[in-house]
Image (cartoon, rainbow, N blue to C red; front, side, top):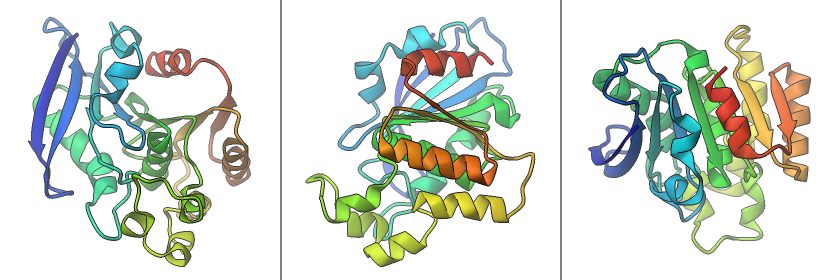
Length: 233
């Protein structure tokens, strides 16, 4: 695979952002799958390459791997700031389709993340299941409302989510996003969501997804093994 590093003048966030990519070898023709890997709080586009053996996971899978930097946005359209959710669910896939021979099938598009990125992966898949057929959360920060009372120094919750009361009524509170998706009645467009971890947050979201009829798995298996398996399904 080839390793690319670039700066993109984004449309949704309306600011230049760095992106790292792994792309299939130049002899491969496609159509290619898409995997978007989302970083944790205080991370950036280099986090996955530094933390995990990403290239070995995707080698030979025919996948374009995109690792964007999305600041400390929790991958939402921020209350004060950038429209990062739109960037993830709308813009990145369109950019890749312009550059490569990409598959249009939702099952060939995956979003995964750890920590803050785990929340972002689930949020993106629930928002736009036609964009991502699969989502993987690794030790996800799935209930970020707790950081209003127990703040993370790098994160300004009001800038990201707005007042706590507003956040808890919005689709950025994942139980609301689950209900919103099922109320839309888009049967056949439900994403497969895998939660890697054993926290109470994982368990609560897993139960909510199951109750809503959204395909979900809860596992303590090695996250890279899970990711490699999902990519090759």
